[in-house]
Image (cartoon, rainbow, N blue to C red; front, side, top):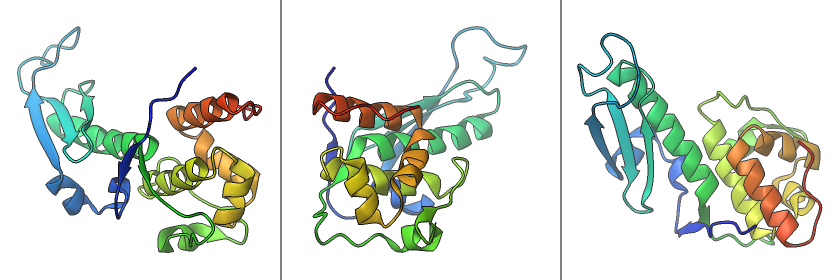
Length: 179
């Protein structure tokens, strides 16, 4: 049960970039959707594919009839996929949580809805620290100044991130986190 290796980047994590900065790093293409659909589904180029050029991470959205709706879905999916797959090199002994993390943290709790615009950036930060701590979620929680249950709850909202953490833990011989 191997985990795909992370894609390493320097500097700011791409899921933490503002919309304009992320757009400058991406290629966006439009096309027609395949498969079943409604009366107007294949009349316009409503399918959207995004590719983050520096990392090669690619995502598509085709399920909506509107190109605008598919674009919105695709940008969100891209941020989440970047949060799952792309890592920054960090030194956990000297790590200071980002300003966004500090703003969202209330005592030893982290409050964020998975639908929030901040969620992908917070997930990316959590995953950076968890992977840097070699899948030690308790140690990562201490580095991020939250409880382990709060950190697990944040990661659990994204199925792909949760599976990645559990694969990393089981590869080390540690028990998987409970779903």
